[in-house]
Length: 243
Image (cartoon, rainbow, N blue to C red):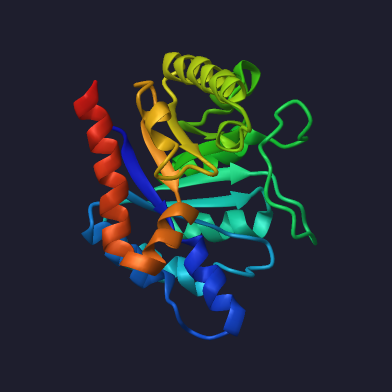
């Protein structure tokens, strides 16, 4: 059975609407772990619009499983992550001064010393990974950089409009996952994954962990965080039983 990491960014986004102290992402993290989540993830923006600096320090203290932090390759954020020492740092490409979502790392275009950054985190006992497209070149780029994991962008699959398109994306993810496993990279999948589309991915057998945020957060508004997480874990368990 693949593991489940719960992304709690939606809680921070809701908090920002009224610029108040609640809802508290840390409380969502605790409830998710009590329900059986294997990890908690957050994404830190340069402008700290949703997840704030204080959130990271609080989460470091309250998360009992593993804390995964997604962040762009910005010096200030890197230094902060080195101080906090989450279980894993996942590097993403962002767009400063824009509301555009983060994008995947392009190893061919980004003039960044990825190996040096990964080595710095390894030196303090922090795992590293990259948010990438499920493509062979990107998997090899992550492996050359010294990462321990990759987070595949599954939006091509989760946003597919036809069955044929979805099957093509699943094949793409499966091939990339197999290559990542050969390079001893843990395989994480995220972006748009929910209760209705996770099963075909889980049936591959290559996916080590799913990172699910919006679907669980939206469901939690109706049934509560613990129940929403339990339902997602039950979906994963049923996949295992069906194989």
